[in-house]
Image 1: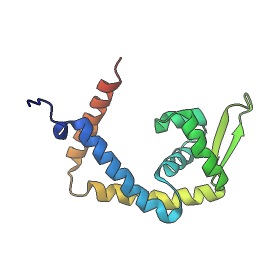
Image 2: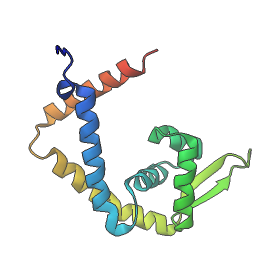
Image 3: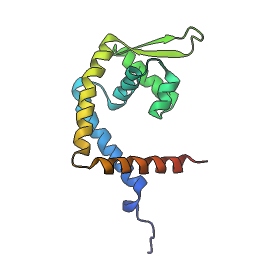
Image 4: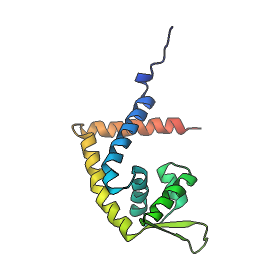
Length: 145
C-alpha cells in the first residue's frame, strides 16, 4: 500500500500531541491547589484584565460560551469568582476574582512561570521567537476563509 502522507511528520499533529502533553503536565502542577489548568487560565485572564465579560473570556480562551459558563460556575462555587450584571445590561456578566481567587491566582502564577521556564530550558531565544512566528502563520493559514 502506497501512503504519501506521513502523520508523524505533520506539524499540526506534532503540535497537538505536544499541547496535550504540556496541558497534562501543567494540570499536575496545579493539582495541589485544587484548580484545573482551564480554571487557572480563566482566573489569569480575569486577574490581568481590568474589566472582562463572560463572552470576552470565552473568546480569549478560544472556547464556546456555554463551556465558559460551566467553568465560571465552578469557580464561583469554590469562592474564587464573583459575577455581576453591568449597569447597562444585567444579562452581560462582568467577572471579578474574589479575594480568595486573587490569592490563589497569585500563588499559581509563579508555578506557571516556572513550568514555562522548564519547558523552554536550553532553547535559544531566537529559536523560540521563530517557533512563535511559525505557529502564528500556521494559525492564520488555518483560520483564513
